Image (spheres, rainbow, N blue to C red):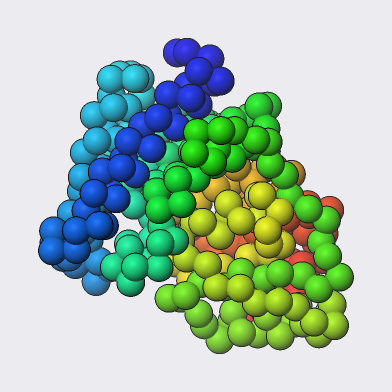
Length: 271
């Protein structure tokens, strides 16, 4: 297999090509063809177009590495794969349908149950966030790259909330953070784009209580780790991938300043 730096560049190109396919449909709503999956979540023509492109391009790039994608049936033998691509062709389909612009293409390489390379591309903003173990985290704006990193937790932390998945637990966590720090700033951002915002220092904390899938977080986790942040379960341990019968993640917490993880974990609602 090619070295990670070359692989990262090639995968970014694939994600950006998928982004262009998504945008072509996003700009022409009559071709969205919104359907619904068994869990009632929306599915559009853009999801399917991006999935087909990514799977084809990854097969050409790394023919021996299998792909686990949201838009395909999971192979029953997947847990025997030591190396795999974990893909969400369009993360934030609800954001797509609502036209908030906050959706991403997520591609991660998982080795030994840990993400080691990740690309997250936000098509509307022409932004790509990339990371690989040992290579740091980078943001590409209109094709020009710059290294990014988290920031120290400010006096008034910036807390990211979901637009479509707010819950009583999330409200309780927001209240606990505000009481602990004296105040906080709540920001609504859609999809896995929240992890990008923390990785680039534009936000600080993201508590997640509702269900997510492994393809929602794999690319974001390596991006955060290489940027100096952390994504963990509520037990403080990094999430593992392709390690269980289910692909549903446990509730998790993202923090920018890694040294403050235990402090923020202690604010999680009990029970």
